[in-house]
Length: 614
Image 1 (cartoon, rainbow, N blue to C red):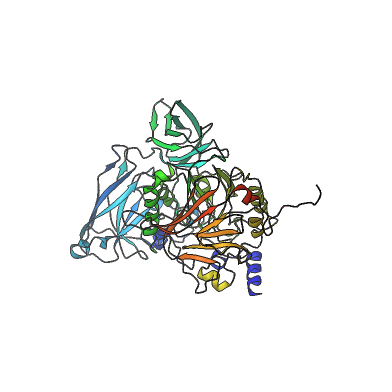
Image 2 (tube, rainbow, N blue to C red):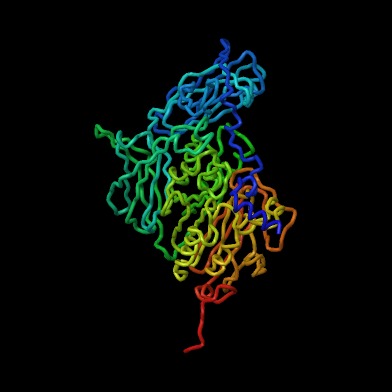
């Protein structure tokens, strides 16, 4: 009864995700949100200095480079910090008219990153230190500022010289994605060139295939596209221009080389670096196919800046383990809570730079989470403020995915022997909704003879989880999560359902209506009995505690960072591995051996009608 009333409350008022979701509890704040930038005081100190070198970056085409920042302060304090600002000019000229403050603030834009001066022990001893920052090309110059007074009462005491990349507008950070057809691949990237300034395209070729060019479309978004603060205020930063080209008529399983180009009005071309990818197999093709799945990774900083809530170790470790094994990976699914930018737009660039080695080489498919979409009165199913005012716009623009309507973040994706049905938990999924109809079409339309491995993906846990909040609520699921969907999973014999949102790892038995349909734990063979539900939201963000209760259906749990790898050897053999982000070692695994006749077999609530007539 209590559970039903709670679900009804969530349904009627679409309450904030901090109430209806499992893991926020105030711990999901963005590191930059800790700075009260509006309270900054102008207090330049004649004896305090800060200097950055080198002045010019990227002489050899690099889009990432280290900068040394020398600071000197005759009155050092443990709460002194250095902020990195881009553009380099960060005075009140950037203040939005809608800030509406009685006294105009001195600074209205947050830094793109910051670091405490005491991170170098010399600072507290001598007042002098060198801090090392890793900068990425973000279409503007940089400056560094020394503040006293901590993050809550910043006093600006010194400002550095400007630093810039040789070409701040250069095309950078390509992101591959599957197209709507199996022989399509999209390439999305970021630059500082608007369509009137340069024509964007991708030049690509394969072995035995002559070079060709595919035109790219250009999009951007503005401060007015954001739904609220901080995205409209201190978190705003111009995102540049996002370009997408579609490479079509690809041959299956062929290695292609590509590069992004911008043709200037004078006829010269600005080129990116060269990249490679392998095209998708034909749907149903019998070949080795390997898939990585994780959620809630966020981003880390390799220079140690912006550290807050212990986000960085998991995020960087997961990224590095995937990069390390990249030659044995064909496609990646990042199933929501992508950057945790939470309205600080600069962090989207930081994230795309972090995953560039992955996303430029294999399709990097994303799903929508609460930290991408949720904002009151914006059409999201939940009324929380987890997106920081982004209301889905950066995610929908910065990445491509084969949805019919990018504002409705649900889509199907075929990769060889796999069919993926990706749901959007930030929009209504219940029976009768538009999304419910899509989910059933996606599950029902796959030919299991050629694509035997049917995977369901969603951000919030629509299935099963023993996360502590779910345990307290009593349902072990997102409220209203599986009530409408479990009959579809069973009817269409979904092999595995994956979720993020809860920051840990957990695997269930093959389950239907809260009951284990198979007591085996490591090897499943013969007819389908029930869907295995997997929470894989421990890719980077702060970890989520488990309930002290452990139902019989919960087979494995891990309070640690990790990700899943699926390997389809052929139409009847599938290997599941859960790997630790810290070392890449396998912690949990199982295999599935299932022939086509096993998929056709009649099991509980998934039997086709029959007749006694001959």
